[in-house]
Length: 339
Length: 289
Ligand SMILES: Cc1cc2nc3c(=O)[nH]c(=O)nc-3n(C[C@H](O)[C@H](O)[C@H](O)COP(=O)(O)OP(=O)(O)OC[C@H]3O[C@@H](n4cnc5c(N)ncnc54)[C@H](O)[C@@H]3O)c2cc1C
Ligand SMILES: Cc1cc2nc3c(=O)[nH]c(=O)nc-3n(C[C@H](O)[C@H](O)[C@H](O)COP(=O)(O)OP(=O)(O)OC[C@H]3O[C@@H](n4cnc5c(N)ncnc54)[C@H](O)[C@@H]3O)c2cc1C
Image (tube, rainbow over all chains, first blue to last red):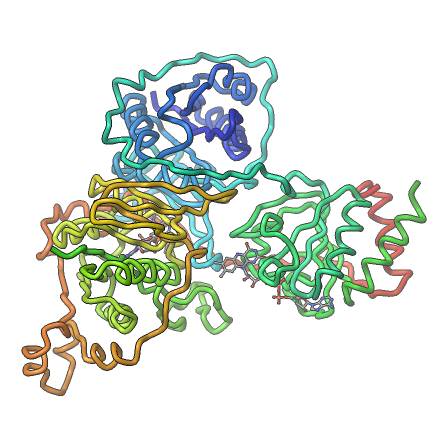
């Protein structure tokens, strides 16, 4: 009872990255308040799925395995989660802020009449005293999220309803195996007693999901280009440097909108959150929506011909100049000075 | 009976261009300095409704918005683009609503209207949660289809919808009644129509009429379509405990402005020696290489 639950998304027999990141965070939160970590897995042909999940320190996995449950459909998944939460009374429930999680979690929260915080960038425990009543709360989940188009950061709490529900975007939390040999308990959900015809109201006629080809999230070095890169041709220089350094190319939204690179490379509030050991921002002004996705990079270099560009404020090194002049010099030095 | 479509639309501050003057001295956002606009994705939602109306002669488009009295502006804006009528939900008791309380109030109004189809935007650009659509659907106990990019086919009792997902597309079918949320990748809304602008420019809510110096009585009697319905809590069959602040389980504990903390940065030029120095530092500290 009152444990921490993570809804695990499944695509093609794999647990989504964001779910593994949430399990990692869930384990830490569970330890802090001395609760168990439980995972919810809903899909079809899930035999063996626990091997992907237990290493993240999960104590109990609830498996709902049925042909009606894959691919994802809102109503049957919501019904199963609502039933489970009514029985288990979780303290906290976390979902990925993905097209699945942001479709499912609000429906579940509405059915349970509990609060849901969207798109959190940080989760931690804290105390709270209600101003009016003076009532004190210990270890509430502080759910920290950007709102207002990324211009403000709000700390949201749900003092009185449980579970405290939140969605979190991919890449925001770190994924870390707890113990490769960790084992927990598997509980099977009896799907047939829960679902009826009404839950199958939406029918999937066709589905094309691409395997994620570009994955800049895990890259240790990201050379990111903005509108100031100016052309696809200059972006090619960024690709050359990235390949040389063993990194990936990222981009601002303005660069994506200009058609310089694919959307999958967009860093920021409506793109990917990254935390590489080196982030080189080339011709990026540093709008909050962009920096929200990269300001935790270990080292930041800004190449910009405007010395007042906001990005320079958070950079460790600022190169005042043209992208097209600087990158070839970096490439040249690197080629000459390493084997 | 006509095919009734309710479009949920929200008036929002334009958060896409928050300049320095939009920040108050205490660091909070000065909403009144930002223009109030039609939430962008709700215009995409309206366009989907208009496309259905292009195909179905008996379709009727009703705008529903919850907000302060001035939110009637977006109902008129929608009428200029082809919506037939609108409802404004406005009451101080709605203040402080989170998405759960917002959805509860909206769902009660929808129940009064009894539409076949409800179309919402995916997300509002101020609260940024994308939760209201799915929560209204749950409160009405009807299916939801989120991230709609195009309604491919529609009949009185069934819709075929193309959805835009993070890494692909999906086509689904569902019987009405149904709620869909529309993604920004869907077609943009058609512009205002000159004839409709003429027809609806005097459309008013009751509160707005009270502010008018001109006498609208005759016009409103002769042209009943100019009336924008205004509902308060009293017009809904509501359990007031679930409205406004008391109906909102989430509380905002703290709000901070996003300010970039200035780092002590090393400033360099494009001279070879500067770039070489930087690259050497990075290699020596094993950041690269
Ligand atoms: C709700 C919302 C969500 C958003 N989400 C994201 C997001 O996820 N990611 C994102 O990136 N943006 C996002 N944006 C957009 C964001 O606000 C900015 O518009 C965008 O990041 C700007 O991109 P940019 O820095 O490349 O372009 P600009 O702001 O145009 O900056 C170009 C920079 O390049 C410099 N420059 C020009 N020429 C050169 C040159 N030859 N050499 C060197 N420097 C040069 C200029 O001095 C300038 O600083 C979002 C906006 C909104 C409203
Ligand atoms: C800083 C801040 C953070 C917040 N964080 C949260 C949070 O994490 N969780 C939470 O529950 N609430 C939160 N809220 C409250 C939330 O913004 C309001 O409840 C708001 O009324 C609805 O949410 P939204 O703007 O996110 O709309 P969304 O859910 O993003 O809107 C989706 C669609 O629903 C329809 N819609 C939404 N509102 C209306 C309306 N008033 N009238 C007509 N149609 C509408 C529109 O079609 C819209 O496109 C927050 C508010 C602030 C100021």
